[in-house]
Image (cartoon, rainbow over all chains, first blue to last red; front, side, top):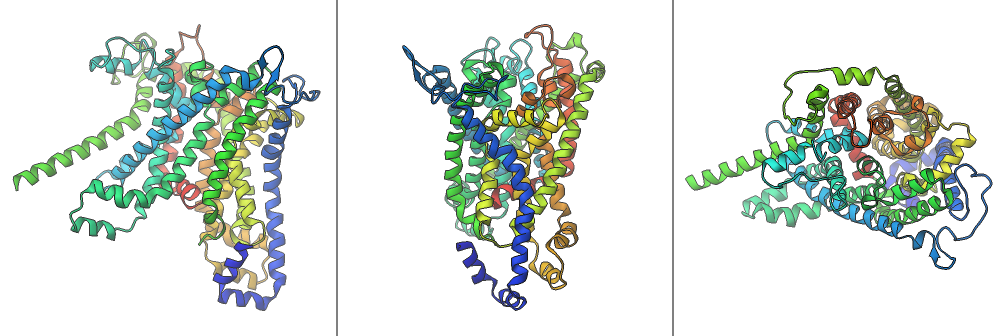
Length: 323
Length: 280
């Protein structure tokens, strides 16, 4: 309703012209709009809506990969059941470990990507010769498929022949080669290194777009007043780019919460880097336990849905009345 | 005076050091993959920063594998089909969402945005069942269908943003002439939307080309795999003897076209990404 009202308020003279043509045209347009939307809605229902409902249903059954059709309803046993001790997803320490790993990965990598992304964007926003070349270079990590970047880094992080150990030893920072992907204490950091490299350009580009839309007059004023650039950044720039930064952070956080590819390639199913997506797929495909795996998928969905709802709520006003 | 000069010089030096660091950081892994891929296997385990001599044997080894060449073909087929479907459905939906005011429009936009945030794992088992029922398991069709879950919402979203920026007068003229919405879309808007469609198509292509989880789960045999899965599954005699030369050669082969595309269309890509995120 609010959308409609704002339309009539802003349309003004156009509205009058449309009225002259009668409501027939408008009604035909609305009918056409729904007709145009139908194919998309049908496809989305087929690949997203229905599969999601089935996944939630499977999470209450004993379905296995070979017999998905003949699954029996078993209530919440996949989640939690008492049979001389607690069993089920919520009683599995490995599940909680993967929840913790996912959150740790999300907070650290998105945090680093945000800080680095803003720095990169500030550099790219400065006027200097060769700026386009630097921007092009920053797009390369973004363009490389995640699997490929994980493989490239796996080679660079190789414990015996990796160039990173070679560099660090050459600089005298470490005395013996580190087993980046095998050592349980280091492997999560290896994953974070790769993700930060791959995703920082995305944050940087979004922040750069916001920076380029800023009015230049307040910077002129600040420069005339002799305020230090650092102060200007925190008092003027940061508040102005905060909305764009927020969007970038949320997009990245949603991506990080469902992380799969990088970890699958770098450390496979190791428990020190197991995330919720890795855990769920392992149960589903490798252990063929569709019921249990679906329970894990459902919980992951709920966590991300919570995030999404918060985001939609915050961004709600932008959706309806654009322009 | 000299002190301010000095200070300015130091600042300038620091700035350029930072720029160089950024460029090296962004490009070094790819550069190093190229260097590695051009080494003969005898020199594979000597760390070196430069290309001393060019040896194509890793590329020959990878491209003589029928399964790998097949996987490139599969990736191209899947990605192009996904782009075509996403653009066709996305364009009609974007017209409805961008040009027509109707009740429930905001709700549909929310729905589309919500779907774009779905974790892929959440639909894995349900989608597996759908794909099996439709008899699309282990075939490009299954991947084409499943990839619409992330390409379609994104395409709709970005095209809607572009569609809204077109002037109202065009459409009013078309309505005055009695054009139907379909004619308005295809004859009036589509010619103006080619740049936007190229942008979204390119982004959808990259997303489909890079996808891994569905490709890994919904294919079974080497002949049906896509490139990312093929690369991830290249293995040697044991876990500790991965054939790094061929892996790097394969990585370079699938990345070079993407990097070239991105560098050519970098302006478009940046505008597409920001239209999808910032303005949305």
